[in-house]
Length: 286
Image (cartoon, rainbow, N blue to C red; front, side, top):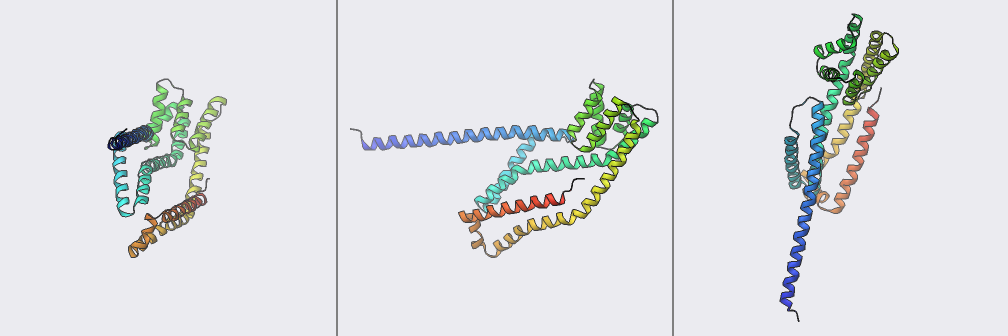
């Protein structure tokens, strides 16, 4: 007959072994997820920084992102609780991509703003008797960044044997805007079927200038709507902070009880829908 003490000891060791195996499995899965996220982060962020001519080490940025996310989650846990931890983790993970996206959009906006003047300069160069390649060289040397940087890449690819149309198409992939597509289409059509490329580029430049003028008016008219969207989005957060300072015990139920979490989830979903609707209203495509 098996001794009861030895049976309990065996059961305890089996339970401990199962817990250790479970913890090891969880750490293994977490390590694989972190490594996969690191590879994706380094690849995507590194490519975006490279295309935007920003010299930075993606590995260092990933380490900084992990540290800042951990600090934000810890501070949010101390201030709010488990809900704050989740919000801090989500914010820390989303912040690098949002920052990189903002940097890319600003660079593309500067490129589009510079493009009409560059097309007028290219049209004048063609009328003076130069060919298209020489005109692009002048754009690469005399125009400001980021336009000069992109055309420098186009000329470098063309010099090593790549067809000019393919190099321009690659620039369109890097700077994904309809203005680049119009320019490439105009150049390709003029080169294949003939025609005065200088007049075509001049007409395109005037069209882009008028488009930029209309977009500026639209931005000015919709600025009030964007400001109202920020106010409406931040006002509930400010009110919740004030109420938490006045009634911390009652407001803490939102972060410690399951029904409080449900209320926060509903509020977050409704605010997200409102922000999306405001964004769709104020973003008018010309």
